[in-house]
Image (cartoon, rainbow, N blue to C red):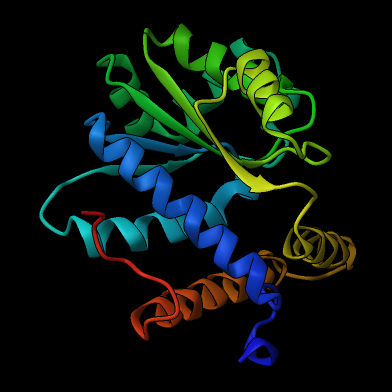
Length: 218
């Protein structure tokens, strides 16, 4: 079945990805967090899968999902990030101004700077509780290293990806190439993201077939 996937061709990566998202869903549910934010377009795949798992486990519990307005948003100062959220994500800004706890979902981190800047921007809205889930930190392999990284970067939930997953590099390459082609429409440049979403639906289908599980933990 791996050949049917455009990005998530490695079955072990698919298993790790789903395991991390399932942990994140339970983390959010236990703490009764109702706002989940993907830290830019790079974290959108995680948000798509998070939503799928959440809807299967807790179909009657409402939760709000948002993606921050642009890629590399962490390169901006917190004040600019706040302005961009207010301008481009009015509903998110409204949630943040009500001081609701937030779960920030990130792809991978190396320096922790993006996580720190986004957290600072959310704090500027008055949010007092920002929990962070990150798929992995390349190069971090031991339990002690993971503990140190989590404490230093303020990460509450860290996945087991010890290197940048294959699908991340493929997606970035295709989007970069598409964006540089003269005369290409925005719809065409976003095609890789749509293809990635189709892959995530297939991962959900694998879970329903029993290869992974969407069932609630006992």
